[in-house]
Length: 231
Image 1 (cartoon, one colour):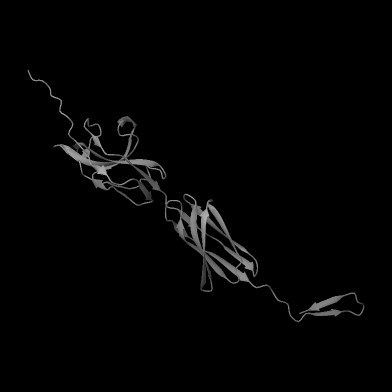
Image 2 (tube, rainbow, N blue to C red):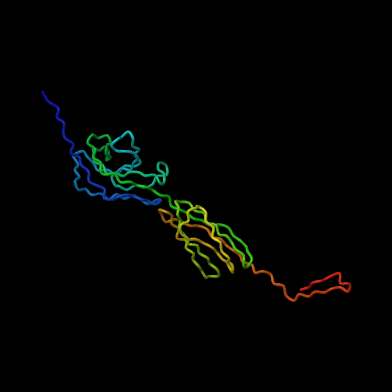
């Protein structure tokens, strides 16, 4: 009579050497893996997994990606910017190259948190016509995670002036200026709390000089009832 023998699980996984992943836009997670301590039995494979939930409770997890490369990107259909996801290395029985998550001997590395952030944007639009000495308002619209930092560039006749604005906590910022000549306003070097951003748009401001009246002559009629002014 044969007696079933329970074999001890031999599968062992190494470790991910990264502490966390904070990824901007379309950049990728590239897992750094240390195989020290790893052991694969005859039908094992090493995989990497990006997921939500707890791998020790398979019923609770949502697998977003699983592969052999350890490279993960943001998926607009299944992921949300700012959400905290988990990355782990796993070793276990494989089918078609992918580790079976229900393997009783599944070995799981320490979990590393991962967050994807949306690329911030800033834009200005419009135009204005003012008289010399008057002010104009340049409105900048932001998307992203404040606080924002940005450079505002004033270009007047080929001479430029850069104003660095920091700690903008609203998604709208108004810069007030009193240009002395026609000026183009643009923006650059946008950052938010997490990422470097993209900018767009310019604003053209036309500055008109106030009219000047010369050679003013007042003529009063003989009855002192009418005044005629010529210039």
